[in-house]
Image (cartoon, rainbow, N blue to C red; front, side, top):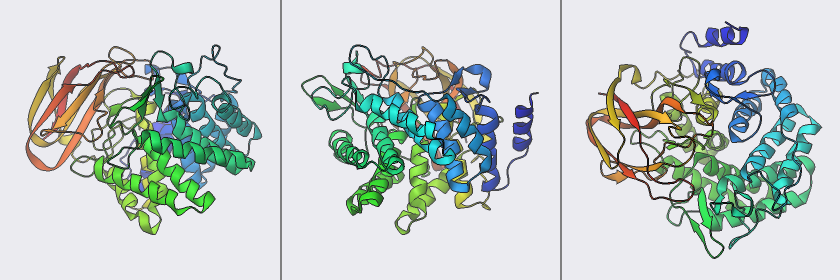
Length: 475
């Protein structure tokens, strides 16, 4: 067994007794599991299941988890890795309509990651890469088009989908704020403020202070897809509001950030109160964990501390240290992509800083769960159960790598986050079997019904699809 694997196995061999030990194990998973050793990330664990990454939000989320550990503890072990990752980070050129093959969200995720690498390492090359990645979108004529040009298209000139995603614009704000801090150029702060205002007009839900992630711009109107409350973009917008309040002294930004954080804590969990990051495998939860941590130590943020510690108490890693997307679900039984794992890894790091001597999770009863084979390939479908927790199991990226969305009703009510299950979406570019597609827990055992319903087709998520192999049930 290679040395890295031996080191990781030693750290994970016994159940960590404290949150601090669980945090150290999460860092070991990053350093010896997901990190490949050459400035690259493995896209999945086990590493043989997927390829490697140096760019995009999967790589950047893992880099973000390392940075988060450094920010909280100044852990010296992560600095050489961040320096190596800065060396392999993309050096962007220019993007001109008609000759730009890159989507807008990837360079902005990369810009945030490179700016954080600069903060931890002092590497001026990383800061230069962050500025170039930001300029790739900001100075392009390919994205700021359509009926609402203040919001960027994901693909140049709208591509084939006419989609605009808050993954682009929330990272634009985060990158601009970081660059304002590290370059001292006030133009970056002005750009962040203007984009923040545009995002609130375009993506903010009219009922709850949550941000949906998608809208379509057909050149005449801009129509949001309601209820796609990705962890990444809501976390980014909470963090942006907090940073803007600190930089400008305008208290309204903080009030808006707090309103979104309260809505996440109050509306986007299962009945046991643990956050449920529904199955869109292109989402990452790290930004939300970090934003909640930034609130947790303030007098008006005690709810965020409770949110983090409740989720950490439920989350359990697998044998190789990886976490599934669902904090309240079972540990993984199959390969886990970087996009799914980063939230649980950052959650362990956050809990270790908030309550280092507190007990690590015990798995919330999943060791007593039984697997029930139950094949579902047609919609609508219904599952009746007697128990207190259920996890639906099936492959992610079954027909790789995009269309295929379904809605989920629990006891007659659709989940508030209507991301539901987007089973075919696999940014890893692989079919990942035995994945947790959905997990839900009730405070006590009882009779419950899950309904799986066709999603409403659109140009991004496609039509309906399901391939369920069975479910795990805690009686």
